[in-house]
Image 1 (cartoon, rainbow, N blue to C red):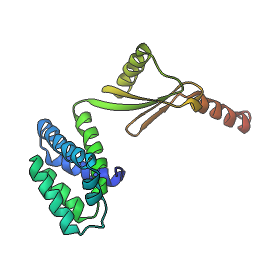
Image 2: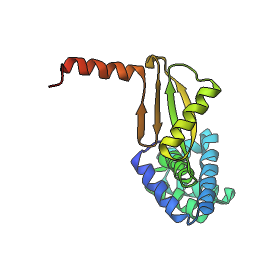
Image 3: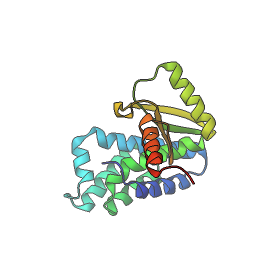
Image 4: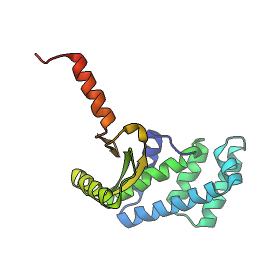
Length: 184
């Protein structure tokens, strides 16, 4: 249901641009979040809106009615109806996630997806958060995932920035350098 990558990002940027100031953009995000939450909370509603089995006019009417019931802004309602019209309703959750990232970035906050081999204690998480905040010059929120195949170290992704300090990658790089032979 979510995803869409670059297409969702483009829609999110358009909605973000409509917002005007930070408060208005946060309000648009709240409306979009409420709409997405209502749809995903109902399997029946999700089925109707995310599958093109139902006629487009019916799906558009359902989306309009839902937007009115939730009292979403005209911009969010129009975006939702446009998604139905273009058979891109499945992008709704991806657009919401991309808009959330844009609103957070505007407020000086970014999310770092951190993968470690083992769980980090609170002190290590704070040290990592602080180091990443200095690196990107923003307030960083960590989302930590565990992947035992890393052996050790940390991989952090902040937007398009990938910081790979995993032992697995270091060993792979060492192996590649040894296969190349001595530098001339």
